[in-house]
Each structure stands twice: as C-alpha cells, then as structure tokens.
Image (tube, rainbow, N blue to C red):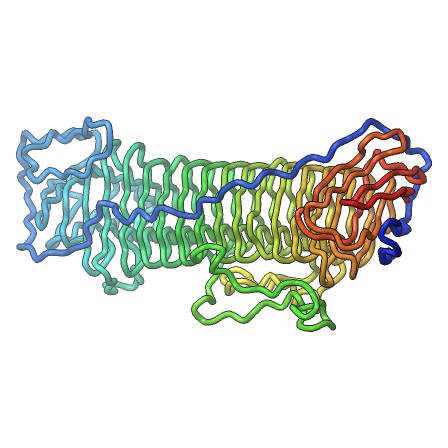
Length: 628
C-alpha cells in the first residue's frame, strides 16, 4: 500500500512515515559511507558542421556533342595518384595519363566527351551505359551526363574511380539499374563528386530521386578517399536493396534523406558528414519486417537533419563510433510541454493534466529524433552527442544499452522505449529533456547516469507510445499518458550511480518500483502534485543507497524494505540546505545537498538499521530519528 508522509508539526520535530520492513532485525551498523556526487555536467557542443563549403560544382554548362573514341592513345597508362591527401584535380587529356589495367577497362570523361575502348560500354551523347559484368575504371569530369549500369541480373560489376566529377541537370549522375551487385571503389587519395542540377525528370519506370541511385546490392569502398553528394531537390544515396559503406570520407548536402535505403545498411570505418532536409540515414522496408535494419560498427558520423538523424523501420545495432547528431534544429525547437503542479497543469482530475502536451503546428509535424527504430535497438559502444527536437534515443520496441557514452539535450524524452529500456555499463548525461528515461519497463543495472528533466526523471508507463515509426514529433504518451495508462509498468534499479533532477516526479512507476542496489539520488521540486516517488502498486527497497528530496503534497515512501528507511517532512527548505544523517556513534552515514527547494527527505541505505536512532540535520533543523 502507499505510505503518505504527514505534515511537519513543529519546526524542530521531524514527523516520520511508517514504512514496512521485512527481516530488518538481522541488520547491523557498518562503517560510515559518504554520498557519491552525481556526474558533473559537461558542456554540450550543439553546432554540427554542415560542410557547406564542400567542393561540389552544381552548375551545368552547354557543351558540344560528346565524342566516343575507339582509338585511345596507345601510351595511355592510368595509375593511382601518389599524393598524400585526396585531390580534386581532374586531368583533361587522356594522353597525359599513365594507364594500368589492374583497375579495369578505361572510361575517360572529358567535359562533354567520353573516351573508351571497352566492348561492355556504350555511349549516347553524355550517357555512358555499362552493360556487361567486369571491371571498369572511370576518371575525369562529365559536365551534364550520367553513368548507367544495366547489366545482366546475375552480373557483378566492379567500378573503380579516380578523381571524378559527374553532374546531371535532370537525373542521377550514377544510376545502377540492373546487376546482381555493384562494387564501387574510390582510389586512395582520390575523390568522386556527384551533383544533381536541381530536378529529377523521370526517364523510365523508376522514380529516380538521388544522385547515386541503385536498384541492386551496392558496396562503396573508399580508403582515404572522398565521396561528395549534392542534391538540392532529392536524396544523396538511394539504395533499393542493401548498402555497405566501408571507409572513406562522405560529404552529403541534400534536400531530402542523406542515405535512403530499402533493405539494410552496414557502415564501418567511415566519416559521414550529412546535412539533410529530411532524415540523415533512413532505412525503411514496408514489405518485409526482417529488413529495414542499420548496423554501424565504427566511424565518425556527423548529421544535421530536419528529420531524424538515424532512422530504421527494423532494428538498429551500434557497436562503436563517434556520433554528433543535430535534429530539427535542436532541443530548443522541441514541442512545448506543460510542467507539473496544480494551476500549471495537474494530474488527471486536477487543473489541466500535467502530461498533456501542446498541439503541434503543421510545420513541426515531422519526426526529429536522434536515433530511432521501429524494432529493437542495441548499443554496445560509441560516443554520442545528441541535440534533438524530439526524443534523443527512441524505439517502438526495446532498447538495450550495454556500453557507450551519451551527452543529450532533447526537446522530448532522453530515452524512450515502448517496451523495455535496459541500461548497463554506460555513461549518460542528459542536460535537457521533458522526461529522462521512459519505457514500459525501465531497468538500470550499472553505469553512471545524470539527468535533468522538466517532468519525470524516470517514467514507467503502460500502454503504447503514440509516436510510432514515421509518426509526428513528440507523442510518447502511452495511449494518453496518465489518463489512459495501465498499471503494468515497472522500474528496477539493481546497480549503478543515478542522479535525477526533475521538475515532475523523480521516479514515476505506473506499476511497481524495486531498488536492490546502486546509488540513487532524486532531487525533486518542492511544490505542486509532484513528488520523489510515485508508484501505483508497490515500492520496495532491498539494497543500495537511496537519497530523495522534494515536495510533500503527494509524497510517498517505500511500501516495504529489507533495510532501514527514514522518511520525514522537514518544512520548506531552500536549495542548498545540507542534509546530514549521523548514527549514534557519531559517524556520518549520508551527506547530501539538494539543488532544488524541498520539504521532505527520504533516506535508505544498508548502514541504516531499522529501530536504530539517528540524528538528522537539515539546514538549521536537527532532530533524533528512529529508522523504520
């Protein structure tokens, strides 16, 4: 049953709340323990390089008719450049090149001319069509044309690029129409620049809408090489099957998705710099639930997107890498929420309902999450700086974080999972958010977590999140939030260091709360209907340290415990009033300084023994307390 803390009677006498205690007689006093400081704040860098100065030429010029030369000079020999860094310089005379057949059959681009001797290539003006399996080497510049792969359905086509620039005013500069697989390699110290002139005109049955458009399995390999994608009216890479990015520096400035993949994408060892009008990385398959997956094992990924940073209709699996994600303009552009407290927006039945979120305008009805998946999400490593208008990390299924470091500023939730959110062996700092950790089941077993929330720090809510894959910004209401919630949620803390600074409830378990280990500190507000602990069924502590301070209007403490609990009303205390608990031998058991005003204190620790007497100091107050 819920235990309510009763009001303070005198300024010098603490009023205790009775708490259930099972098997407390076997506890003994242990050595003095000191409170552990919560993780220090880290300054967030919200600026994401949009690489607007990428050397991409989007202009098209009128040129004379293309020339196909069957008699390439016999002394032509093409070798990889020998410079130490990628070069954007393009040779203009094939006779000046040194050519080696190890890269494949030559296709030389010279503005509006194409030189080739390959029998697997046909040329129509500035349109180059590769129709046979094999290896091809492309180098040069094509001012308004395209390379098309239209081979057999079982053919494997290997294309190696030296430094190359291709612009198409009305289509995809690189169009992979048919083959079993295409392997693209950009030579070390070289670059490939693909630019669309601002519109896509349909030329066949396919809706071509990316500067690199592929209907086949595609692998791009670029070791110390660069790929530039510029699409003012479409996507960067569109891959209708699978996409593998292996190494290299990829710069993408587009109006739609940076990478738009249908089946699966695998990224390793890449530096990705994406500025996009929609999602940075978007993977979606509406026909097969086993597809639509993202795997990232390493690399440096910087995304500034109006939509989601990384989005998958299937699963997301991140094993490592460095991520800087800015979505929807950042947390300051997030949906405005009402805060807790009567008169500002209270509980259902109160004045306004504190979790009703303001209506969006049509301009913001776009998902702008940092990392999002419709299926399960797993993160085992990596560093993440996320500044998102919507949830920073979101799954419509479950999230398992077993490693990595996160620094988050979110206009909505820090982490949200429709089912289970499991956190272990991770370091998380949430500087700004509406709710910090939200899921049906929240499990914290190890790591260091520090969060500041304008509503609940941890919220375990029943029901289904209304902002599904492809849904609008915000939501996360679990079927109407508190008004329509179920009481089947749970919060389980078995280890780790957890610091919560919340303007709403510190821990809100719409179901059950269980603490069996770790070091948990909750700093809640002193007014309104919010409180340190809020659970519907049971709140049990069997181990670990818990320190809580906050308001007394709707206060609860633990319903049962296996160690001593002290829960008292202490009047109106200002932020900075120090809390010190001293045992009968004069040893300091707990020392803590809340950062917000407070009127109740809840303490539990293995060193607090039920039935033993303690002295509690709170600001200028002091009194003798018997632990429950």
